Image (tube, rainbow, N blue to C red; front, side, top):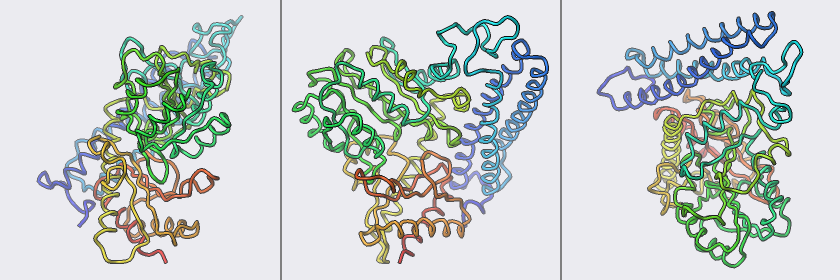
Length: 510
């Protein structure tokens, strides 16, 4: 019997756990829905004054209709959270249906919120303003071109810094949205190339995301020294020997090793030994809010600069995968001119994309990441146990996940609450071909269909539905292709079915 067959019973641990997961999902969606209602209400109350009469009438009707739809969704979510009669399977189906609707509405409502706006808003007008809801707040040559900066991004950036970055009030961090995670990295590189102190060697994590490696190598030719993220002492020796002006690291590498540098130990030691201005560029996409690099640093470390960036496609959209986006942040005392270089590189996020991002919420994101962690840990441990204990032949050589004792970083991550949301499957050598990788993907999907559970073949991670993917297939000279399972936020019963589907797919490989 699976949890889909279980009626709610307060004494059933399985049922209680599933209901807790569903309640958390509904709470998350309700937060997003209420934020949309608020934004649309502002549009509804203000656009008459700043738009032509016929346009105002049209927008008012659309905003009213959209608010009514959202209120109906909110009512349904509240009802679900009180439901004690339906089967777990029915509640999961209902939750998934509403989530799909909320995801679609997010893009529609964002477009509606910015509909009265202009990309080049006017600051003066003889009759009709061309600034939409921003009429009266636009100043010529200051904020009259949204490619440079705009209020929708600024609003989110301030919320992000307040909700997600742990820093002293003395030097509050500054966050800057970009059109993608890669756009954030290219903007940071542009700022470093313009920095007169960034003239020395550049240390680069060997297991960094392959596109990051390609970008850094292209822009700092002849200056790259690769370092092993898992060897803290070797990194410190390299810093002493080479006195680098920049260090590029991923907090959790999207690579076959899923390498994790010991940031808590490494950064204070770097601050103590550097002999020149040094910038650490940290890709926190893999760990998000569970990496807080400023917490362990000496309060006055003028020579050590930290710049952090993330892809906003992963965790910050709460599984909706609605728009492309990235963010980068630095301390207020940093001399790196990220704002100016974002403007000159044209890497700012679009206004509709900024409004599509859910409002930052530390508690909800924290709880969601823990669900990803739980499910990834379940998958990793189940497949690792299958590999070690079963005598039946299987194509799997090893399971790579930081939460397993076999992982080289386990000694410093075992007590941390988050070990990432994806698992790497290393197949035996004879199975490491593109043809067999793709055969596994198709077989896993087929087996999941038999189990009547959703499993998706697709890129990215941090989504609500578990995905399987052949990563880095087109990387040239930086990494080998590898199989990645990106755990979703499903209930335990659904994850157990997914584990069974993946296991059978591995056993079926010829």
